[in-house]
Image 1: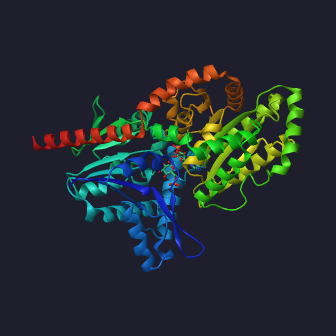
Image 2 (image 1 turned 90 degrees about the vertical axis):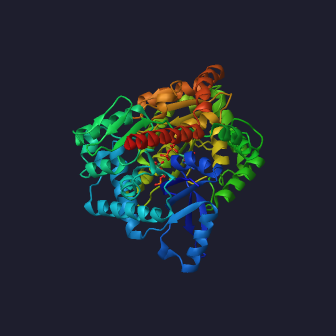
Image 3 (image 1 turned 90 degrees about the horizontal axis):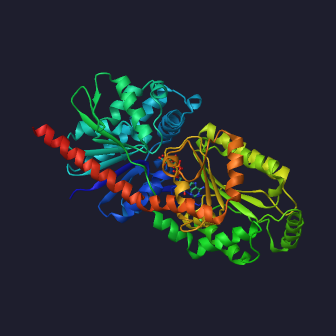
Length: 531
Ligand code: ADP
Ligand code: G6P
């Protein structure tokens, strides 16, 4: 039986060691898991291979067997990496070299030969784990920047097997890519796949330019078929990733998401009821995320409400502004432009004081890759900026920014999206950005404005959003102000056009298109070889 084997650094779920010595499985956050998770769930012939998220030294032999079984039940094959491998391959070469370089943060990129060695070692470990399970009729779909050497390693052992590779992050300009001391090896690694996919045609062009520069003897035809000097062909194309639109639209209408939404609206002074249902929805969400104590709403006791109302009516008598809510959902990553975004929000409060007491920003930002120094520094910077803005602009019973660092599951996330009059999605660089698409799905058939960075793949598709340069604080501030003021009719009209596209270009459509193209190019390649 032919199967699809997805291979990525992370599995859709990771394992966490808990303090009482047991383990818990956690849903992974990030575009890759969101996009491929539903496909894997729906296809029984699909196996997912990836890192377990835990070091084998952390568990006994008995535990290891239970863990492997738990993953097997979910059609996943875990790969266990030692701490040294995680340091060099994941924190090091993947997240301290390739991630910053590919996101145009070359100044953050570190070129450490030991990390490169470990990257090769771990790619080989993946190849070794796959070799015994691959059948010649299987399709192997390798994901992302962590495993760029794997196509070549597998190709050597399986000359006929169909291999696809998709990059979930941007591909940098040829000049930037060339600065990587191992750029040649990386290209050789991925070019052994039959099909290479990117989010946008710009990334495809940058990739082709890099191949042309590093391998002047290669050629590329008009259909994006690259021919290497050894006669090997690799097809290259853009496959913009989508979301499961119906899932987000439906989930945003679920009881829990709606309770969250009403609670947020209450807390932002938009409505006066539903506080109790919010409290219980937030409680459910907290239990679901199995997260830390001391939730962000704990200082909002019911007894505080008269004070809250008094202060609001005080500001309301100065101006008649309707209260509004801004939302954003991110991993805490320096590519997401959080400090710039916060500065733009602060500037708007300063420039348009009529918003004082009338706009609340729900900022959901979950810590990510905390073993990498630049991520820890960013967290400190965001903490400080939130504190500064809240300290400077807060009223007695109004706090401009609700800052949440827990990881929430899909229902509360959809509740947050649904509550947002405006979503502020301003990455400095992003391959696609699924958050922008999820927000629109959660506003299916209704208003809600999207302020979107021109530096992400999604900006090519969501042209009716308020498109901004995320580095231009003034521009983001003005767009935010306009997006908050826009009429519901205009917001709806903009959304309808974007939503129509998102309903068709879904995650399922993306994987089907990629896999169908892979099937075609592999078949064409085989018949060529036979001739
Ligand atoms: P990236 O892949 O770089 O994290 P994307 O915007 O493409 O960025 O995808 C992020 C995915 O992870 C989305 O599905 C989003 O809903 C989810 N996500 C991001 N941050 C959080 C968070 N703090 N809590 C829960 N889900 C999150
Ligand atoms: C991006 C990458 C994914 C990664 C995700 C979360 O979406 O493209 O490969 O899984 O970020 O990052 P993490 O390092 O936690 O896996």
